[in-house]
Amino acid sequence: MDNEEKNKTLIIICEDDHTTAHLIKTILEINSYNCLTAENGYILLDLMKEHKPDLVLLDLMMPVIDGIATLKEIKKIEEYKEIPIIILTAMADSNIIKEGFESGCFDFISKPFKNLELITRINSAIKNQKQKQYLLKNKEKLEVINSKIIKQSSYYETQNIQLKKLDEIKDNFIASITHDFKTPLTSIRSVSELIYENPEVTPEKLKSYMEIIIDQVDTISGIIQATLNSIKKINAMSETKKENLNIESFCSSIVDNYSTLAKMKNILFEFRFNSEVDTICADPVKVKEILYNLLSNALKYTEKGSINFTVTSDSSKIYFSVSDTGIGIPPDKIDNIFDKFYRVNDKSDVNGDGLGLYISRKIAQAHNGDISVTSEAGAGSNFIFYIPINDC
Image (cartoon, rainbow, N blue to C red; front, side, top):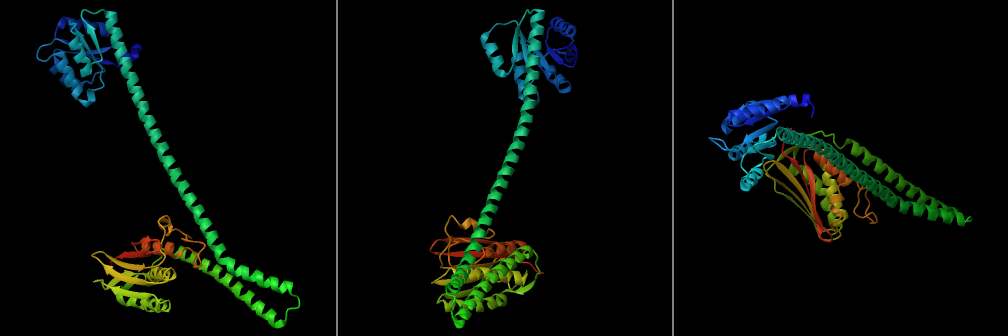
C-alpha cells in the first residue's frame, strides 16, 4: 500500500492509557496513516458517527465498557459490520480471544508489541478489507450481468416458444387448407381422367363431367374467398362500433335461426335469459359473430343430445354461455383452441379454417372481455363469453 492510499485511510485508536494511545498514533502517522483517538468505547461509538474509520484499534481492558462489549456494540450496527477491528491486549486468555473472534474482531495484538508487527497487522487487515470490497463490488457487477443474461435468456426463450408456436400455426394452416382442397381436387382429377381415357365420351356425358369440374372449382374458389374474408376479419377485429343493445331481443333473433337448425339434427336446443341487465354497450355485428361462432361450433360437433344457450349477469359483467353434449375437446388440445388456424382434428370431416375462436376471443378482448372454455372429451364443452356492463 503506497503513502497516497494510506493518507486516505482513517484509523481510530480506542485506548484509555494516554501514553500508549499517543505512541500508537505517532507510529501510524509516521507510516502515513490518519488517526483519531478515543478514551473509551462510548466515545469511540460517538466518534464513528462523524468519522467512519477504515480500521479500529481497540484496547481490551478499559473503564466504563470493555473492548469485547464495545466490539459487540459496533457489530450491531449494519454500517460498521465490515470495518476490521484489531484488539490490543496484555492478556493471553484463550476464552477471551475465542469470544473476540466470535464477536467479529479481525485480529489480536498482544502488548507489548513491536512497531513492525503493529504496522504489518494493520496493513494486512486493511488490505484484506479492500480485497473484500473489491470482490463484493465485482460480485454485484457479476450479479447485474448475470441478471441481464438471465433476462435475455428468458426473452430469447419466450421468442423461441413464440416462433415454435407460429411454426405450429403455419403447419396447422397448411394442413387445414390441404384438407379443404383435397376433396374437390380429387373430384376434378378423377373426372378429368375419365374424359382423358374415354375420347369417345358422349356430349351428354362430357357436359355432365364438365359440370362436376366447374362445381368443384367453385368449391375451391369459395374456400379461397372464405380464407381471404377471415384474414380481413383478423385485420378488422379490434375495430368496434358500439351502441346500446337490448340483450334479450338481440339474443332471441339469434336463437330463432339455431333452434331451427338444431331441430333438423334432432338436437334439443334451450335458451334461458336469466340476466337482470336489459341493455349493454357493444358492437352488435361483432357480438353476433362471436355467438354465431360458438353456436355453430356447438351444432357442428354435437350429433345427439342438447345445446344450451344461457345469458346471466352480475354487478359488472354479462355472461353468454353455450354448452353442448358434443365430442368435447381432449385435455392436451384445450390450451390451443384459441390459436390462429388451430383445429382440434385436421383430419375430421367438419369444415373450418381454424380462425373462428381466435377471432371471437380477439373481439371479446376488444370489448374488454374474454372467452373461456371447460370441456371433457366425449362429454361436451361449455364456452363462456363475457363483456363488462357499460352504457354507451
